[in-house]
Length: 393
Figure 1 (tube, rainbow, N blue to C red):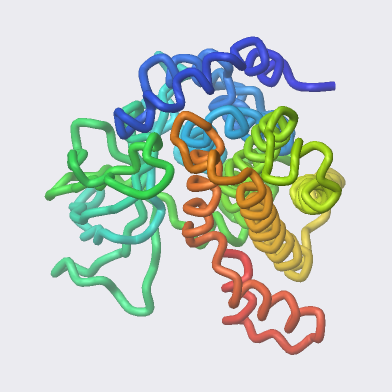
Figure 2: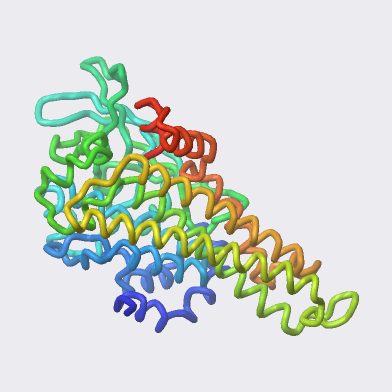
């Protein structure tokens, strides 16, 4: 049975493609698109119930992201990135969650998590400085969670590095206009943000190592198995869900176009070679989606039984997530090239899915080498602790 959020997304399904071009022209989501996402409830699927969330199965969230992305890539990308932040926020001090959601459960927070700033300890908290790129959806967010390197009393990063995720309200950071002029995913508005000498109370800083090792959810006493899922099965899969949804949108768009297309040799729908190639591409996209969702179901069943997930299973999940997304995007390229020269026209929405799917692979969660290396080494029993750590990031 589909979650009620999916039903609301389907009810608004015509709005997302109708606004896609407008989002690109604006360089951010339109107010209409952001409003539809907000109304759907997708951003609250992983949010704690005591703050108006649903605490849904993670696959309910991933499927919802895929569906939105299949209609408008940028809207799906924002749904995945911003929508997974409430999951980690559930590990923070209740004072922070009260600030965020006591008055409005639909408050959104942007990111990025990359540690591009330094937090210098002072009495009661930290002085925070830095500049971050790729803050997706930031125009529609009232808070931001930023990656930080812990500093010493001089403000220099301590060694070995220690990473924190730090929350700031909109008044404490600046969005830099003109910093998002890109080849794809233009509608995500993933602009740069700057923080200058902001004071951060200590309860707004979360030790990222505790998120990775599962200490954070235990410290908060979270009982729903949703919060026992590892980082590697939530954030990377949220990004992958957006890209897989984009690929599904490309597939649907391409199929619809081919029904009436007249190619050099006659009607495209009568070309057995074209049909065979597209059929293979469809199988790649479908299999990639199914594998990721299967892995999440398997992991969720294990944590629901109170057991710990092995490092090998985490690494294999990341391996399949990375490989599946690459397979799906390559399948989109096969479909796009068989749509002929007309597909180059911007009036034909195939170009958007094609560009945005390929640009989505540039996200760091789709880096292949370390993930494949680590998962194979674990299967062979030869992985070092350092290599194992790479597999779950």
